[in-house]
Image 1 (tube, rainbow, N blue to C red):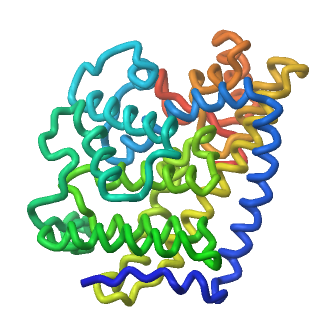
Image 2 (cartoon, rainbow, N blue to C red; image 1 turned 120 degrees about the vertical axis):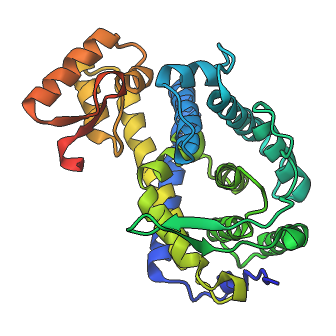
Length: 351
């Protein structure tokens, strides 16, 4: 059986790029902490936006989608789910809210993981929510010809309970070591969770919920104000490639965590940079509305919809936002991606 051992994090022989990323994240985290204390209203507005984006993006990665209007209504609990996909979305909302509100009471332990999984799937009526898989599963991929092949074989169902218990103990042991950087520990644990693949369904979404939980418990709450899940979705090709690289040889304890660690840290760094830019825009009420809309689009690392811009700038009317976006597209400073209600806007130099 797989041995879970994170002692390599304590030997000081980590790649320089990982060390540099953690240093950059630490600096941005300090700035964000000071700003949050002094600008509660701004961060409250950013939190509401991020929650919608997190629910939308984490489900979209798994092909579970609905309109932006319905996502907002479900997240804000102003409407009940109308179909199966929306029930799945509502379940993720509930589990995400649980982590936002009670992360200090929840831990990476078996009973909490099972409870979050049950919460995530209960709205959709799945009877296997909160239970480990009872049949072996495999992770498939399509080749260039459209043929399926097995990319990875997770832990067999008969060994899943023991593997999850060993993972929990290994995490607790490493977390208690003063020589282990907690930020570097998180992606290692999440990778192992994904390779165990303990559930019949919902493993990907659970991995993202658990990532947020471990980040919060380690003092990194940027995912509350900028969607970590959205960053993964926007760069999911790189995410899945890092996951693939780090899972090679996992069954025989010969894998390298470093590709997945680098992807995780890069994603977190992007979140902090995005928070820095969104704060600057939301906090700059003294400049013109046109300039604030332009800054919102030009500074964003990801495409934004008109509705999302209105959420970031609640004092600006949708009509004004639409007019400025149209002018930016005509002038060539921004590009429209998609059409009608699905349209998103991004600075031309970020395409």
